[in-house]
Image: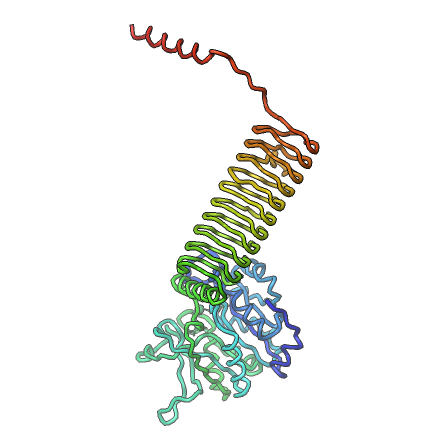
Length: 487
Ligand code: UD1
Ligand code: CA
């Protein structure tokens, strides 16, 4: 997230002190989840993070207040790096109550913009348009409205009518469960995003009552309360409906996720990335992929992964939080996690990079090879059936098929060091801590428990003995025994 100095942002808002409050304390009962609603993800990012990141483009991050409650500590931890402030609403008695609880922190501002933690795709421009309209009109409360295809479930807007003509002035917001006959058909809904002048807000907020279907303090009731107090309450209608829709159900979560990912793929295609059958690929919103990289069907690129130019990422591969250099080829069915892979590397098929690897330029990692916390030097190769854990491997090293680092003694992890130019024969076990000196050889099927000096050959296996005629004698004895048992 780009950091702006608070000075820059003050000049944009030109005067009045403005905070953004994001209501995010609810449990999200309709998701039927034990996790906080705002930590559910679309595009690989928690709902609340989307809103905080957008809000922090409008005011300095510390003036963004996340109102948290259900599982507050988890939410706070997940958002800590955004630099936003937090208000804790211990018990959730409704959206009006959330803002009441925020009064001590928020009343020092001239205006607050109120957003919902469950409306992730709201755009910066839309919030700014609401802010500018709210300030220019000097209204006490300004609310964003929309006309979705199906208004069911949302609060409806009652506008003041003058000679049959609908004005910007709002009389009240009526929640779904309080609709009177005929009001169900009102097409205009409350998006749940507001501008408030703090003074009239906090002068009147204690007048909210809980005599409604949910027994809660509705922030939406502020419209009618402020109108009664002779304050100005205005509506601003937003055209781009989909971005203003909240998430209340798993179906809505899935729909918005699909939307975000389709947009991401479109953005990458535009930027010169080839993606075949993009509808089968899952690419998180924060992923960066450079031009002329080719992504085959059924690939997932997640988290904060960055893929350089001219790469090829083949089918079935899942990449999580990796940085991949230009020209690297990831063959089918690789699982790569929290690792750095440099330029012109070849991985796969079926390679597994667990967290903490650095694979240097020109290296090869082949099928059924697992790496963990391992540095693989330039041009080094581990092509088949191998486990390398807690290892530091130099340049031009050849790791034979079936090599295993025994890095764990049941209590501690130990390091294996393999210096430049080492050749490890197939089926070797390297019992850490151990070091293979520069240019050394390890004979196939060795069990290496001691350090190997530079340029030495290490053999760590029993000597072979051949017992002549043993097999024939054995076979004859078995045949004779069978014959005897028939009689
Ligand atoms: C709310 C509006 C409704 C609007 C809709 C738009 C009210 C009463 N109704 O309904 O008019 O059409 O949003 O999406 O405001 N929250 C708290 N503390 C609480 C209760 C809720 O922080 O005590 C948070 C929730 O976590 C959520 C947001 O406020 O992020 C909105 O609450 P929610 O229960 O989803 O309201 P809706 O029923 O969607
Ligand atoms: Ca909601």
